[in-house]
Length: 91
Image (cartoon, rainbow, N blue to C red; front, top):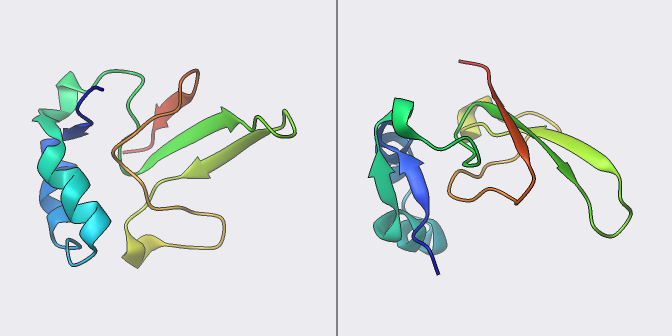
């Protein structure tokens, strides 16, 4: 199994949320890289992600945001990307 990849900027901010045990474990296991070295198939914070749901074969899009920027339809997640997903940065 591969170590999750996270950009260093996201890591620093997500550490502030590390009171949540599963997140803390993921962050401690992650391989931190400079933002410009994040592979195209890794989803980062403030990115839009489009994926295809296996159960109904429907495409869905979400934007990964920090809790303070959370709105209806937005989801928090940073350490994994689905295979075949596309990422678009909105920074």
